[in-house]
Length: 350
Image (cartoon, rainbow, N blue to C red):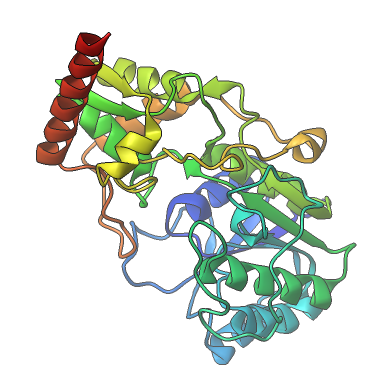
């Protein structure tokens, strides 16, 4: 019996490479499509690699001729009109299209709790780069673009052949955004660590390998739209404790629970304190549909441990989209000192 054939669009970094690993483990014959620049290593072993740009019709045409494929997993869908062209070219050559989208497509993100039935941003399937607008904390051009890409896929493949995955925050080995790596390195430095909000706040980051395994599972024949995140049974306190444990750090964690005060000090949510966000919907994403379809997620401590092993392995390669994350040491010390002075004044006034 012939092995099922999977085409992975974008296979060099993070989720893409995890999808390749998951597909190979599940017995797929894998073809990858990658640009061949700014890559994180050699072509994966035991796969067929086709090089080219997602926005190049000639390169996409070569992909279609390399078919037929049983499924496609698209990690490169950002600009709707590009995704529409790719979908139309590949539609005759593949049975199923799995697109990696984002919870940012929801109108209510990150303010409201979300299900797959929540309202989605309006964007045309043939929209160009950076559609829509950026709000605070509301919609983003990133979310509008992903919504347009979703429409491009569903209009081309129809509801029975299209699968849309909407992850929240993805963490794990080979992460290039830098959220978990920053926290691990901060714990490694030890000393007094500033933590924002309540240690009991539920969070839902998901391991990249769990997203990849679910994508491959869907590629085997699962249509529909799925939020992909952890169930929310772990907390920010669990996360920071895990980071401290796997690094062997003796850091002291100081929780600043007065979030309005912290914001007034000029501390930026999400970027200066990675994963800290005060909005009610940031970690209120319903994933019951995905879990019923086979999504399984691992504990945060496992993700932290494996990411730390990767960080300390000496194999990291700088990514062109790596972000500037984390509060500076000088600012962190100043905020902690101001917090202690504030608390002392409050105690003295009682």
